[in-house]
Length: 470
Image (cartoon, rainbow, N blue to C red):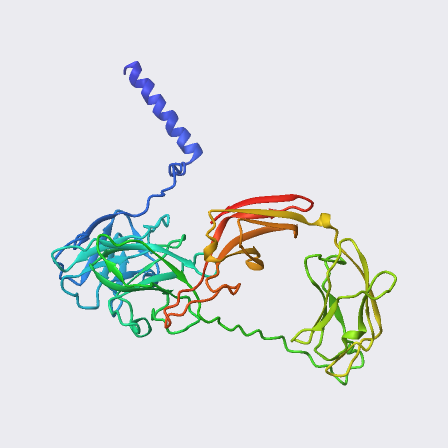
């Protein structure tokens, strides 16, 4: 027996003994590697994509990996719009579509799956996957694109859709479903593809089932003229509006009635009020100081609410008014900076609907803010078209805090409240100082608000300057 053979035999014996002592090792799969980020891709289709002279009502799409289809009924857009939505099913790498409607002759069809097709393992989305075929000799290639803005705010609502009607009657949008429709992207852009040549009326609506303008509180937009689809069709901008605001019912919490048999429960029948001050100081830019009552007032005597200096000498030229809700009393005055004041409210100045007056006469001590708590503001406007009656809107928490008509190329305020503001410009066609909705029946477009992509930060005790272009 050769030395080499004996050496190999001993080595195999050692390996065998080590295997017996340690037991079998676990089989571990190879380490990770980069995550799959590639979306599913179409491998084959029957009929093939962009096929012509198609007569089949069943389509099979085969992808390069296992896929699933999520929410096909809400994501899938079939063009032209069918009477009945097709049936969509998937298994392994295949997606099958069974069309319920008869195919129209010489018509280009497209099936836009949106973001509903994903791979099974990683959930990678085949974004806006679209399959196209034609029942005629050609596949239509015309496009129609544009943008949709909300007229009142200048913002975008990507849940809206753009619709095209073949029926050019004014009432079609009320009665008929569209011939075509498409989604918006996150920036408000839309694009129709594979359209035939022809004349259409175009609209914007929420993506609801019936796709009709049957409620004036719906967001809606229309074009001033018909849209002629051909290879030279230009983009269109829509401005969507609500002709009527939806009324929101605010249900107040039920008032718990006191238990007359309870000896421990006390009922507070006092008439109380709060004061609209900022840390005990009155804003110089707000004309009124408000008394906010907990209950409606029945009787109100303005002569018994007295504004005085620190020597209790009554001031002149202030007004005291009760608002229409009968819960707020406003004392308006031309406030001077850094001044201490007194507000005297006599006991019988107000009486609520149950006959309850204030518990006692109140004397409120307060002051006004200093000018150094405000900043000066200078805004220069470049390229502003003053003939469009622009109005500058100052926005905080998505609410208009002030609107200023722009009548010249510079705006200056000696005092302005510090803070951060979003800015918009209203083009006030009728010069009434507020935004006005459109009216489709009267063919009146809404007034337009444009966003300014520059925030305004006003610092206290600072000369704040900014240049705006719109």
